[in-house]
Image 1 (cartoon, rainbow, N blue to C red):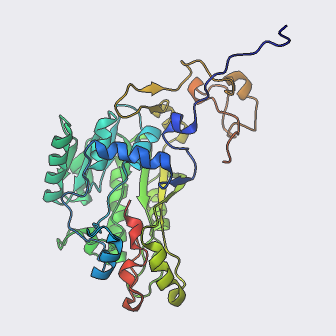
Image 2 (tube, rainbow, N blue to C red):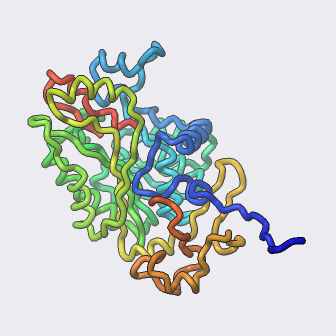
Image 3 (cartoon, rainbow, N blue to C red):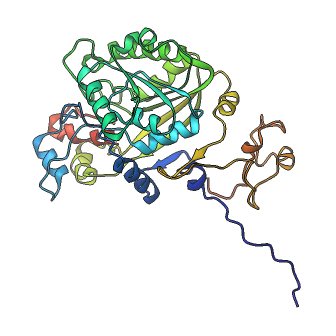
Length: 380
């Protein structure tokens, strides 16, 4: 005799299923789900280090050997952009088919990931060699047509990349003089910090002027130490101030946690005389132009696929799992909605209950082996 009706078990999508990685303020690249996803991207053939000089972080020879470990091979001491970070920036903060603006293009990864996810990328880079390497990598992985990389000075981003509007800005600017990319006087990395900051603010203002009326901007930055004193310059708050001056609101900040690499060895040596903490994170800053709510609505539902299998759209068209709150019920619940939420939100934005707990530093003092102090954070 059956006393109770037993409903069949229904699969509840995990946060990784729905968003690639959990949308928390700590993004941990050391987690297995992150590493597996990153490996999927790299198997596609992304080689973002092409076109860049070796050892841009100016590690000493001894430090490079230390970073090589027991492999006998010198690790490249030049930063690359994590494709998983790139993927979630596009999936979370831009619409499918949207236009991407990158005023500091660098390597190929942001363009290639945009192409794979159906976004239309435009990136500006001062180096013709870098752009040629990016196009070669795009050809290797079969991007046809390739992303749009433009050789030019980012000071003229409005003329080079325009006309707008673009649906998202995603970039990783030079961390002041931490990496010097060339001896070209137009290269921002050759400037002292006050000069760099003035040019940087002007470039961000011009780039934000190309954004759509309601759109997001994502910048990946970190702190840089003064060459003279070793103190932080304040590059992160300076970036926030620059974006606010350009008319955007500061919407999100996340901490991108990087692998420690040789940091424990270097911290053991460098911390006692300096009391400087070994830095193993970067700051992911998200801004909104216009209304953040309207920008989110313009992005639509987050669509996730397995990088080779058919896309899965987790929205109201699917049968909701048991723990989803219906829109009508959610509208009256202050526990699950932001203060400005109301019953008119799209069905795909229905919140889940609260089930889950919610680099760059070159040390100016050579006696501390400064070139290796915190610089590894720029490698991601």
